[in-house]
Image 1 (cartoon, helix red, strand yellow):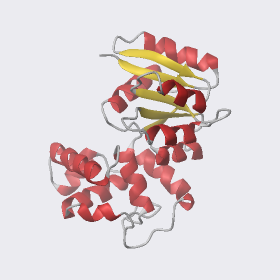
Image 2: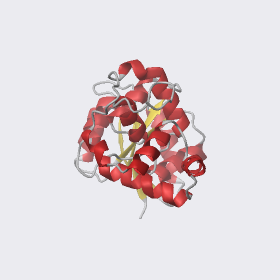
Image 3: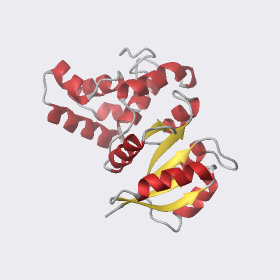
Length: 224
């Protein structure tokens, strides 16, 4: 079954370009388009969508608030934030709102397609190190961390899962975590999956955000 995509951008020319790229793929289909966040939410009431490509700066309802409302819905589609500038504060806000990642609007077509497929399969498309740089830059926007995490569900994690969570939050890939802890990558992937389930998170991007918000990791990437 083809991946159903909705394009959300107030610039019709950009939507046309993205639509042409996606239409050439046998496993993708553009099922809806919207010129702002409000129209995107309205479209979702009548159209089944798997992945939303979401611009951030739009009239009426911006992409961040639209992402927040969409991700709060049951069985919500995955959202990819589109931004003009790397490390844009809108991208950071979009990740906190529930987006599965962010990418630049001038992304090469191959990377765009790979990102859509990755998000659809449940992965995040922001490299952990890029997420860390985002959070380091915008950490003043986060609540002040304390030594004790405020998210009660973190107490459900085993010692090993907490250890893996800290390394994810510091920007390490599964392979790097495996080498650090002398585990197989498959085992690390299993731990990450359990962490997501126990904490009710969508992907590793939200693991990083939560680790910063709860004070488990400080700006700069160091664990408390």
